[in-house]
Length: 313
Image (cartoon, rainbow, N blue to C red; front, side, top):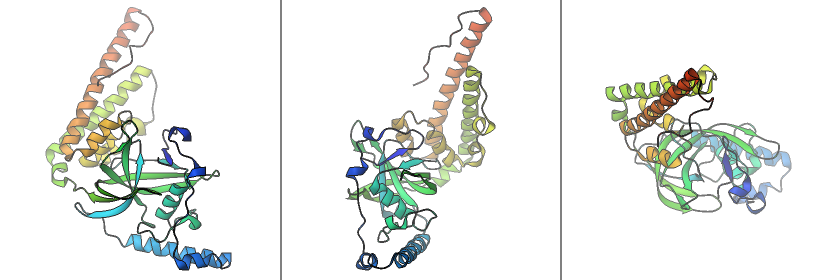
């Protein structure tokens, strides 16, 4: 099971059946690296820093992933759906995943160089895959998202806080290794650039943005509260392309990962935009009805109770 939690929804370790005591792993090292442990500490650290710099240089030389190309990458199985254009904060606590993420971030400030495995081709790349793991069926989704590490912090208890952003979709075509971490051969899926840049897509994206603002406005009204402008009118609504917006809005439906996975697997921007617009429009109508009922109760002096919880399916 994965040795990390979504940072926005922490859970106790036993809920995932993970334990640091049973997950210790030391990366394989070359003869040169093994011999370096007999050298003085400062020499070993210098050598590790040089190795880390080579990792970063090799990763920087890689070309952007093109649709249809294949690559072997570490894939992180977790009970949430990662989507392109969306932030995915994680807490890393299990030893083998601390090694993995230290290797991915080789050369970055604060990374423990002793945990970096310089032999891995993804060393310093800051790129890894994530796929939805369904705890009910004990199955892993075949369509996932390539994530890029954008920031990290180390905690005193050894945990790592890692922020990531979704970049592009992939399909798992083969499982190469299962332990100590999952390594898969993936095929990157082509972006529907023409479909996502059409006039129709831009029009529909504008409607999706307006529906989102209405959902926030009605929710605030029902709770008689106020929210900062970056929540009521987030910059993503105006800055993202129709394709990116379709994924970003889908990432907000965190309560229904199956719905999110279906949106991730949708091949066209128009298909995703139509789906999220329908969901938002249904939510707007429901919240508007709630607001009307609430207002009627107050006007007629009825019981000061909120309408029943619920919403559109």
